[in-house]
Amino acid sequence: MGQVPAASRALRVLRFLASQPEPVPLDRIARACALPRSTAYHLLDAMIEEGFVAHLSDTHRYGLGIAAFEVGSGYSRQEPLQRISRRTLAELVDRTGQSAHLAVLHGRDVLYVVEERAPGRPPLVTDVGVRLPAHLTASGRAILSALPPAQVRALYPDAGAFVDRHGTGPGTLSALRSVLSATRRRGHATEEGEVTPGFASVAAPVLDHNEHPVAGLAVTYADPSDGDVGALASEVRRAADALTRRLGGPGGNDGRGPARERPLP
Image (cartoon, rainbow, N blue to C red; front, side):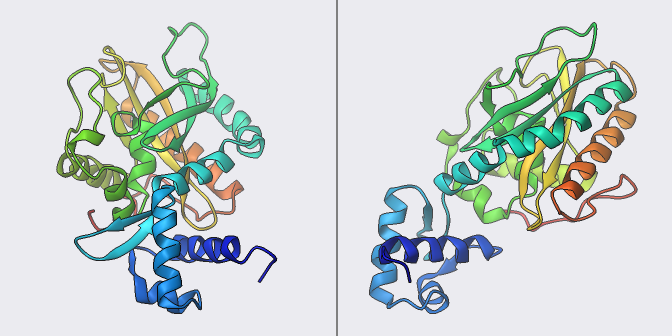
């Protein structure tokens, strides 16, 4: 252990929680991290206050909190992801004739970090640095659909977590579950007029070597259909899979069938 034992223990707990497919009980955390039960309890309590751990009181289990997602998103926003994605987005724009963008999860929002505008297309709200509610955007839904259900649940604990933009889109966890389930079945996410009336988007997740979603890649087009939506979805999945492979992630969904289904939150 290093010269700051509390920090080392906290990082050990975070690493363990990040490796689990769902929240786990206190005793399991204590055993896995070689900590006395009382030490683990007080450490988790402090991490809950800072937002790095979420406590699910009904099941007496602990999982990653929103602050942990923000740290992970911060890595994704760094130059490496932006650098390797620009060429992929530019090629996607050339193939589809539509504007493309890359967004990362930041709390319950998505933050747009790269955008490639298609010539002659109208300006969009998804400029670099803009934040929008993740549950209303195709990029956000793509990311959320690839998260463990318990982490989605921790992000959206009650109706107050759902921001309303234009009076459309999911307003409850149950409604969001349905949207994410449909996203996983299709292999891509969609939104129609929920961000900007008259425009629609299609997106797919970009995964890292742990199969964790680090970004959502999307194209936005005029709605009703400005082109073949099925073809757009196929191109978006192709581009997202290319970035996933460059990050050392799995082969992804090649468009020949549905993405792997996760249990509902």
